Each structure stands twice: as C-alpha cells, then as structure tokens.
Image (cartoon, rainbow, N blue to C red; front, side, top):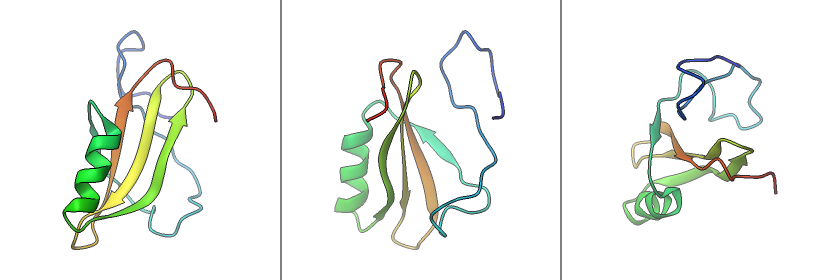
Length: 86
C-alpha cells in the first residue's frame, strides 16, 4: 500500500500489485465520485466500457475501472467507510 494523505481524512491511497486483468497495467488515474453506480452508467451510455465492475474496499469505499470510447483506462472511487467485502 502507498499512503498519500492524512490518515484521518478519507481519500485515495494506492498500491503496487500484479493485475489480474491485462488492461489494468501501468499508471491509472482515479477519480473520486459521489455515486459510482451513476458514473459507471454514464460511462456505458457514452460508449465507454467497464473493465472491472464495482468492488468493495472494506472500510474505505468502492472502486471500479472503466475505459473511455478511445480505450483509455481510468479508475472511479466512491468513499464509503461502511463498504464491506461481498
């Protein structure tokens, strides 16, 4: 894990890991959103694709990975400390 900010303030930290999905390599910019489900739907409605469906990060929130119509992969993050493993 990579800590990027004050531990008392919710936010996006990072990590180095071996991706299971080949599109999730390199540096991926992640955007914090208020409603990840709504944003994922907007991605789909505008020609983008979901690379990794929404997944919980227990105690932190939810993460999803998408690609835009040109194939650029990006992450979405919704803070929700009540997120639990499914």
